Length: 372
Image (cartoon, rainbow, N blue to C red):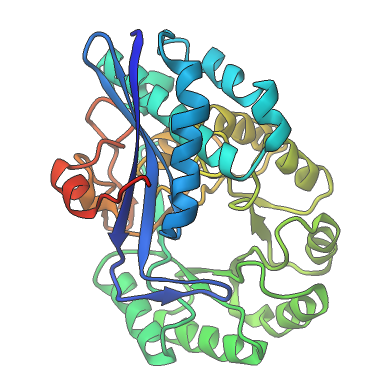
């Protein structure tokens, strides 16, 4: 398992719509930015982070992998993946310039590739390597029907299709208009269409302030909202804690948190009820497990954010006892050898060896971008 090559890559994959928007972002493609790690015995491991397909910043990630992490990896034993995580994450010069951001996104890609290698070497899916599946059914919630850029009519139609034709019992709707009453009207219309048995979560992507969130939650009481995701600025622990004390709607967050220490601060403050780590924002699978175990120790559910569009998280969620549901966004799944797949609202358990991160050669050829 001696590492002989580390090759960064950038893919810009088209969405299921021409473009989508939430309260703070608009995109037309999803970036799959990462590394292929090859070992002396011919195995190839793939790992990646998820981006907004902004080529200039994607190249910063691949430059970090190529110029900073590769010299630390070549000649190492890929089987020592947890030791290698510490070697990269705590390397003094890199720690000095960034314990989050670009260096952590690059670390995530490398770490996932090393875990992919470990599972492939063992000849088993990642969930099996980790210790086996804990549940028979991992429920999916559909986010791709709920973008803020969709008209109310399209939102209602997409929600009804997901529930009535595709078998989802959980959906998520984006909120964050300048006038929150607009969001109340949209949510009420969806609730009236899909009925009371469907679980509806909402996500503001950090758009509002505390007073706006408090007024919104008061108006939304009768809509049975499952959780309120990223209601305010991502690092504002005090405001999230205040909102959690003020409303019966549970607070969910985590996709913008880079470290286990950041999650611990939110959990200790009582500022989060649904913990949403993401292997592409954290330092990969290694740090994700630390966060998931922390949530479990505090008796909080773990619902991963799908920055890797659930290719990796489906393994982690089937294995980890704090997880029962997982986000579904089908933007990139058809570009991998084993796509993340949902049937009747349930994620199918992966069967191929590895972490489901091996891209199709034709997708690499068609959607690959130059590194400089």
